Length: 450
Image 1 (cartoon, rainbow, N blue to C red):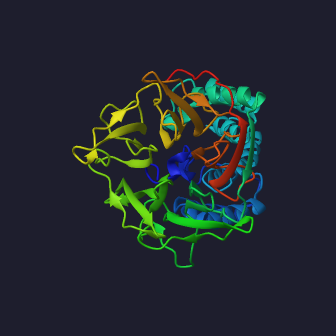
Image 2 (image 1 turned 60 degrees about the vertical axis):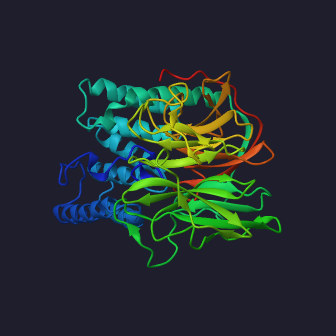
Image 3 (image 1 turned 90 degrees about the vertical axis):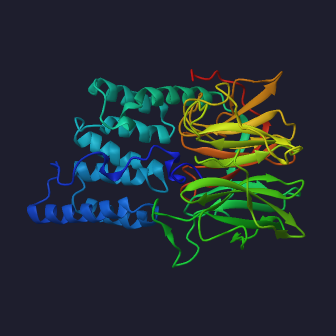
C-alpha cells in the first residue's frame, strides 16, 4: 500500500550496501573452503536481491557459508543485511555484533549495529554505536541512508523516555490463527465486531505469483469471522474485492458497509470505494480526480457523517514532506469530493505519514508517522481538531508503539480497544496484526522539530 509497495516501510538496506563481492575477509578458512564460501555468498546475494519471496533460500545459503567460515567478517555483515530485509529483523543484531567484534574498523558497521540495537529496544547500546559511527564518518556517506545517525539518535532518546513511562495499555498478538510468516496489516472490523478484514502478502498457493517490482507476493484482502470465541481461519475475499493485482483494505465506514480499497492502477496507487449490501460487495469504484492524482494515494478514512474523506498522498503540490495527510469535503451540489487540502505542518512532518483513522467524533485523528517524536520506523500518533487547528500530535507511547513500524491503527466500537499492525520480536514474521486494550492513552511527549 505504501509508496514502492509496502517494503519501503523501513530503511531498506540492500544486500550490496557494504562491499563488492570478493572484498577481503578476515576469515581463517583454507583456499578450497574460501572458494566455496564465495560461491555460496554469490548465490545468497542473488536470492536476497530477488526479494522477500526468496528470503528463506538466501538465509539458508548464508547459514551454510557461516558453518564453513564463522569468523568471516563480510559474511557476517551480509547475513545481518539479509536479516534486516527478512521477516524477523531483530535477528540481524547477532551478526552485526560478530562482524563489529572481528573488524571494528569496517565501514558502516557501527551504524548497522546501532540500527539493530534500536530494533531490539536497546536504546543505550544503539546510542553508543551511532555516536561511534558519527566520529568515524566526519564526511557525508555517498549513500544517504548512512547519514541518518542524528535522526536515529533522537529516536533512541524518544524510545528511552517513552519506554520509561509506559502507557496504560495491553498489547497482544492475534497469533498464528490470523498472522502468517509474511506481512499482515490493515485490519478493519465490522460494526458488530464479528468480522475482520485485513490485507496479507502470504503465499496462498504453490503457484502464487510474485510481484516483479518488489519480489513479494501480491496483496490480498482476507476475511475472518469470530465464531464460538475464536477467529476462523482467514480466507481471501472473492472478486470483486480481490483482483490478480494488489488489493488492500484501507478504510471502513461500518455503519453503512462502505469499504475503501487500495489498488495499483497503471503503476500508481489509487483509492476505490465499494459497499456491502445483503452480504455482497459491489464492484469497487475509483474516487474522483480530486482524490486520485497522478501521484500515489495509499490509505483513507471517511468521517461518520460521510462529509469528509481523509487520505494519504505523495502529490508534490503543497507537500510538507514525503507522504502527507490530506482531506476533502463532500460537495453535494457537484455530487463529488471537493479540492484536497493538506493538513499542514501541525500534523504532517517532513517524513512520511500513513494509515489514517478518524474517530467517530470527527475531531480526533489517529495516524502513523516517521517524523515527530517516533522511537523508530512508523509510530502511531493522535491529534485533535480544536477551534479549527490541529493539536500537536501525541505519541501513543510504549507498548503500543515499538522500535519498528506500527501502522494502521483503528479503534473498536467500545473506544477502549483497537487493532494495528507491527513488526515485533514476538511476531510470526514481517508485519503482524495486534490487539490493544487501553485504560488511558499515553500522555503527550513533545514532538521534536519538524
